[in-house]
Length: 288
Length: 240
Image (cartoon, rainbow over all chains, first blue to last red; front, side, top):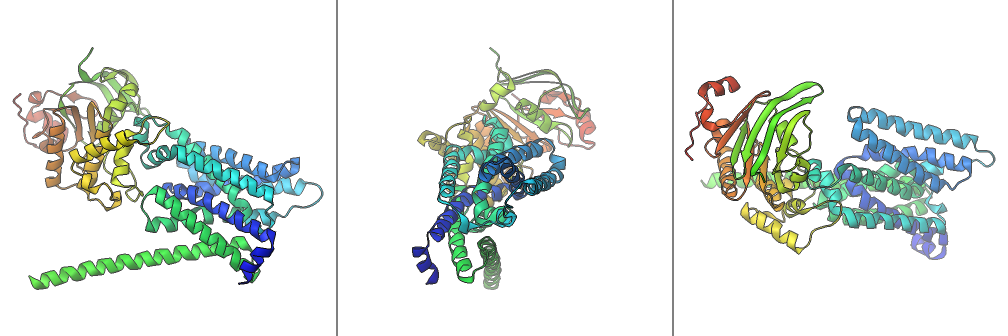
């Protein structure tokens, strides 16, 4: 096994694998809520607006990651306010923020003097360039996600399931909706280095959507989605190493292929159940 | 100290300057079983939301269980109109019922909460379904689960918005038998568009058609009902 051997020898590959696993945790924990609440478009808006923050950070000489985090939180709150107050214009406004964020990012990058940053690696990720300090940041972000969910799991559940009932139980719906969008923002930042901001949506939704076909509670979905994410990230890294193709794209396509298989498998199973039920009924009628 | 569960005086509500409720007055003593009926668009659900403190009246006064609606709402067990949520949501019966135990920003569920939830599920005869996903339940089962969630709040008053709009008549009777039983220890208010059906169960009927409320069952004449619905419905008689 070439990949396993290389993994033993090359530190950058080890870091890449760890980064993939840390990203899988984030997309499993938060992707579940994105899928169940059906807000992947909102998550897409947050992800793309992040480029504006990264561009600005580069221009003003901050760390792009800090810029990404700030921009992600800002766009999460902005998009949250939109979906709470201008619901009838929600998709138009989110698309606008989506595009405006990217436009601002490109302008700042063009205006940044000296060495030109690699725009492609922001857009599509570059898991092989992950530094160990970046890994530490990812660990901290994962811990923030896990602790927040551990503390407020029930509140998120009731707010997403039944807002009205949540209000009656004294749960502040707006606060928890915005907090959830901020957690999505943190996850986007986690995933940027791994798959880039264009492909973030794939990792944020596909593992959870696959998990949702097999398990039927939120906590199990989070665990299953994390495990599927781990599988996808690891095989994706291995395949891209062996074939020398871009990792982010390979990871995305593996996740998509798994989703397709799971959906087809489920559809087939349902159909067979139905057929069996019809057959059984036929037999009963025959007996009568 | 008031023993009125709901005390509404001259209440009006407009939605985008379109009046929905005008000069509504209604007193419901504690322990009553009241049916709130009226045609579609008559403002029934709006009134329920105002009682729950989810909407605010433009004018008039309102006391619920002797307090401001926002204060009273945690003592109310609310059963929303049938498709108020996504039925594919990945959640079990027990988890849904436990939502009635949630209180404020902090906290999950302890053993005491689980015991109360189980008790509520036993009372509505859904304890055997507690591990099932809600998507796999029949309409009648889901309705019982929602009543169990309302009971898990340990309410002084139950408020149900069209609890039987999507289930067949036999199951509907079962649900109302259950409500009658619960009425022995708490106030029950049921919204319905089906006056004929609920009149066999409730003690009083309040008719809401946008601008007026007439309660006192015996005072409703056949003409009133014809005016409300434009058709004949069974006349209501109660001895109590």
